Image 1 (tube, rainbow, N blue to C red):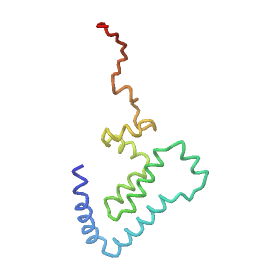
Image 2: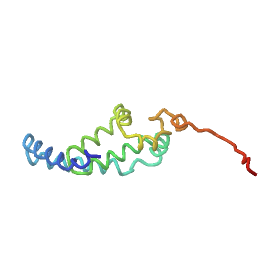
Image 3: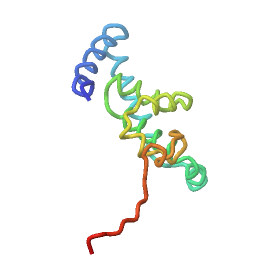
Length: 132
């Protein structure tokens, strides 16, 4: 959570760094290109066939949409995170890094192999009031 507070500072530092290395025009072109690529990821122009394929993989669909949103946000760190989310072998690593609160959300989709009941001990008890 603390990293989220420093994220704008990291983005500004990366803008200046990449601006010095690649030049101002190339940085602006990269931002425009990444925004167009992010919009392309968000727009569902593939029709019903792709929708039927994606129903079996809802977490892949979510990662693709989040990557599109991250690529629309101007900045190099968000672009790299978006590209990182698009690479399938790296998604499992991301899923292991995420906090436990978010893991329970997608545990049924195959990235979290633990069952919800394995994490809690549930004791089913019947009681009778002896005072009556």
